[in-house]
Image (cartoon, rainbow, N blue to C red; front, side, top):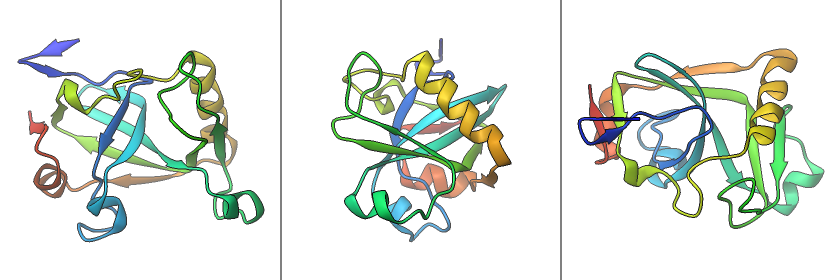
Length: 146
């Protein structure tokens, strides 16, 4: 769905953005990462973070709930093995996302991946992190205030 030239993010869409978490100088704010939209409520959008699966992650478990995906264009836009972090979510409010933030190989993940994400999120709950709107906007020129 489009609104004023900007895309309204839908459940299962994957975007590349810089997230000011835990602060605007953190690694998530300096480099773009992929985030999957897992819920949209009006102007409030909920995301989970994706990261390239690194060998150490297979042996140590800093995340309790996650889903690992291999690259597969029929399922996801990932170019390498990816871990989807379901221990926490990031919540943004009152912003719109430009279409150009969506991943290009495929703009979303398939329903099966979303089902796994939902199951992991529901296991023991998760931490919700509300993102400071002004910081998000200052880091991402293709995100606009509503």
